[in-house]
Image: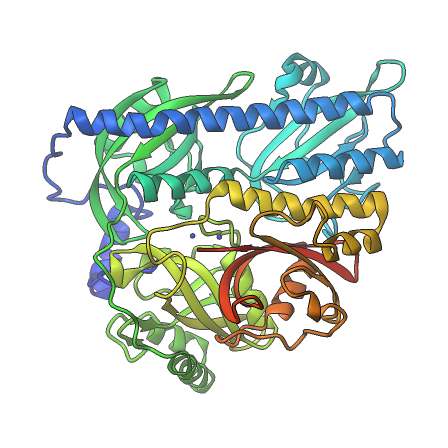
Length: 566
């Protein structure tokens, strides 16, 4: 996943002036901001009341992850690193920890021996070397709490935390480590969506070193607040110092939000999560959350959306990339028409055109995900590479005060280096009434799919497809609908509509023209993940919005499940 602005009415000259003035345009104080407005004790109390349970949830989650990794390591003590039992144990652990990216067993020379990172060229057993290593005495001193790294960028570009614990041979000698990559974005984004919808607050998180590793505004992630030029005003230096030196507190400050292109007063409270030996996170809750102004229902049809994008495609091919991108970024140009506007990215995820968010041009957003966990720039790129079409994601609506709404975008590749797109916000969908995907349900969805991967190792693919096709099996629970599909689109199992089992559904599409199974296969072939779609419920004959999770079972078979939304 998670930001497009319509009320940014500055001229190009003004924007350039502000960019220089604000240096990186995030966190600066503009001239004439004025004094900070007082905040009532009642609001501070309310913010602290909202934050306290979040701290408990994060601490419990981290304790569960570290203790699970430690216990698995103890089960593997004395087991050779290349024993099949190791792979089985890793897949079982991964199925129990839905926010883990992968789990690897490294030998004493820091070489990967076994991993759950399927189809990833960066993770090759016997070849891949660990880039993040700790002395044995540090690993052993951490004990069941494990070593929890700082914010970490993995070799494939993903980012999160690394959690590491030692493994011993049959003689009790150090024999390498278990290393788990953890998706910290998804942990905090689920909590953020809960706080936004239930309380009207949001979160950002930093190490006590000053490294910010979670923020809804992804431009902020990875900044060292003590050194970043944007945080060198007296007011922000005071805020950063207060947060880093005190375990809890409250403060107000002015902030320039690059997501919405506006300066605002932010009121904040914070508390500390103790996530490992000598590891402290400051979790900061703030009130700078936009309120819905009530958006009128879009009168733009899907066909009009496609026509708008195709017009931009023809223009880009006629005038060339540079002139086209300049036109797309013109806030008063012909490629802004009501709620429609053109945005463009290169195939590596770098922003080329965002007319309502000029502060983000040039930023790489490849690993950006919305608050449900959809990596929507990756989904849009994949769809562009498949010949173009529709994708869905939660995205801030500039016409509705930048409140997140479900957006249907139509994308087209201009050539093999960049694509353009436009979108409309859907008002007949399950997010339109203030509801959201509960992170517990999202994690159950991921657990189910990973559980099928684990069962495949134990019992084989046919046994798992039989379970999916058996309505009395343990895989049938609540509003989750598991399925299995081959690389050519043949359904091996489909719990939502068993009558389709054995048929080829490569041409399956919904009323928005989305190629459901093609998207499932594409996502699986890129390692798996989450996506939104619209599918037909055979019980009612109506289409329903779903959140899908898919992963490869092997090179030719993919498991998935659907969570019905709303």
